[in-house]
Length: 331
Image (cartoon, rainbow, N blue to C red; front, side, top):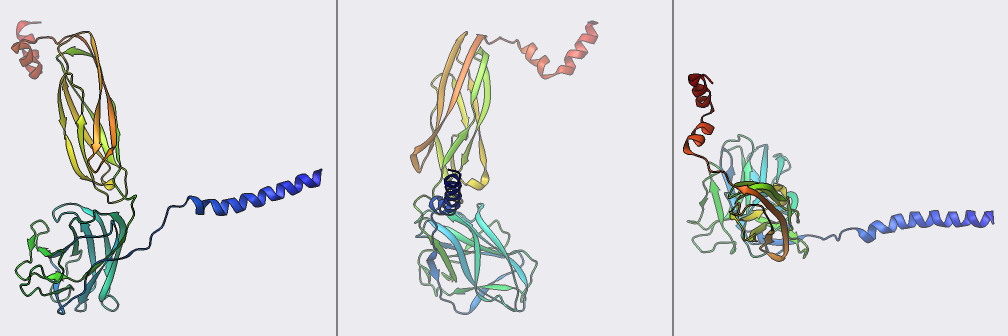
C-alpha cells in the first residue's frame, strides 16, 4: 500500500512538471513574423542633412495594421550622431512610438534599422516617419537621409506619400516642388485583435443639493487597447433632468500611452426640492459601437436654492470688506 502511494506521488510530480512545461505554450499569445510593407528604394545618391534644427519626414500609407520597425538609407561624412526616428499620425502631433540610436561612421551607413515598440495603425490612413538629430552636428559632418528626385513627376517615386521638412520643429513644409521621396522600408504584420479598447472609471453622486444649485464632478476615459491604437470616443447619452455641461464631449486619437483623460461635468439641479434623480452617461468607441461604458449618476435635492442679495454676494467675494464693516460698526 505504501509503495503504491509512493508511485502515485511520483507520477503526480512528473505530471506537474510536464503540465508546467505544456501549459505556458497553450496559453501564450499568438506570435507573428513581420514582413515588408511600404518600400521606396530609389535614390539619386543625394541626401538631406540631419543637422542643426533640420528635421525631415516621409509620409506613407500602411497596408498592414501593425507597424514593427523601419529602415532608412543613410550616409555620413565622418560623423558620429544620435538620431531619433518617430512615427506620427500627423506632423504636428505627438509621437505614436519612437526610438533613438547612436550611429558610428565606421559601421553605420546604408540601410539602418530602427526597431521600436510595435504599434497598431489604420490600414489606408496616412502616417509619417520623422527623423532628426539629437546632437548639434553641423555641415558637412553630419548624417544624410537618401532620397530620389521626383523630377516634377507627380506623385513622385513613392506614389502613396511625399517628403516634408522643418527648421524649427513646429512649422512643416512639403518638398512638393521636386516631388522627392526619402528611401525607407516599413515592416509589420496583420493582427485582427489589435484595436483600441475604451474604459471609463468614476461615479457622479450628489446628495442633499439645493434645488437649482450647480454641482460639478469628473470621471476618466482611458484607452486600454493595443499599443499605439487610437481611440475616438463620444458621449451618446446623459440624463434628461437638469441642465448639463460636459467637457470635452468627444475625443480623438487617445493612445494607451497617454493614460487617463479627465471629463468635467457641470449640472444645474432641477428646480424641485426633496426629490431623487438618477441615470447614466454613456460613452461609446466610435470605431466599435459595441465597446461602450456607462457612468452612474445620482442626485438628490433637499430644499430650494437660497436667494442671495447682491450685497451678500459682494461680501462673499470681498471677505476683507466684511471685516472692515464690522470694525466700523463696532461689532
